[in-house]
Image (tube, rainbow, N blue to C red; front, side, top):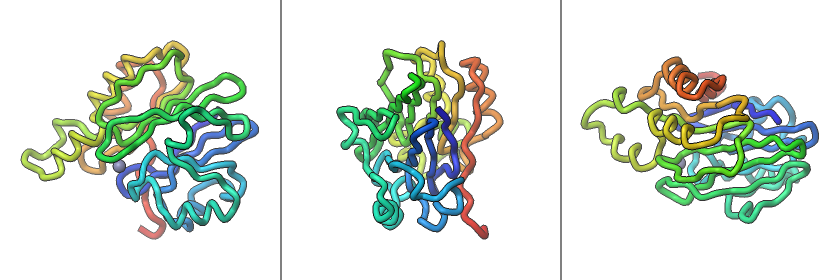
Length: 219
Ligand SMILES: [Zn+2]
């Protein structure tokens, strides 16, 4: 099972999960043209698009309708509770804490590998009865990088995950079989990519990368 990040952050999110038989787009928070530019293969070559919640940086209505026109299943977490199979991948959602209804996902491949995906969530009490092979989790901001009195601070505290909370969350999970950690949705000016990767790697001992921030074509 492979997880790839093509766009991440508050301006747009686009990820991909594949095994040898099935390909799934996770989030469609960019225009259809941008989705075509960023993905390594044609949208019609994917089996489904699952998205976490109805915020524009995760779900673009026009993009979703273009994907549906090309035969893809496009659904949010309510559809995947209880679990459903898309091709060879079993998909199961779980509710997470954001400022609107939002879901995290557990993907299980036919080879037994698993991926946990968790984004736009300030806190997750969810633990798992298995050790995820791949973890994709938000690390939005560090408190010491926030400007005091900034009006966005209160919203972030109640909707997005800090690097400290991300590490606390990871430590509560069984990482014995975890191969890689992907940090998602880093804030442009309240995060430090190199530091976040280092801190997570030090805390977990697992190879960690940060998803690339979304840069629109021509910007
Ligand atoms: Zn959101």
